[in-house]
Image (cartoon, rainbow, N blue to C red; front, top):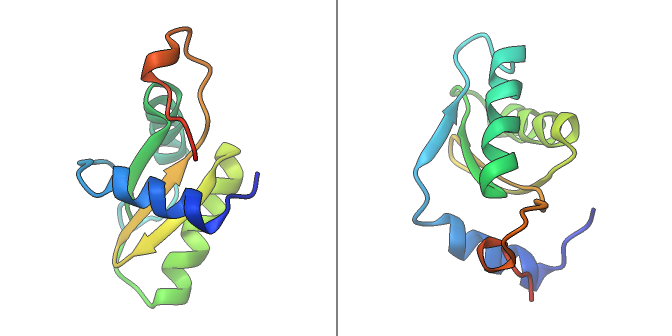
Length: 100
């Protein structure tokens, strides 16, 4: 799934006030981290993941790998925070994120 620049800006705006709900430790992307991120994405569609400190290319690679393993989109990597989006299939249409 590819997002346009306008859609990414919209999601970054929504993600600004979200709390970080998933944290990856020094071991990196373990199966537990991926499973937790999957559960949160299933209920929220947008999630912030805290990754370990390291060089920027390494953090970006972790964000891409996590997004790929979850069938999600890496919207942004800002510092040690990765913002992921995956459209949900909630029955209540009012709670879904509507992209412009």
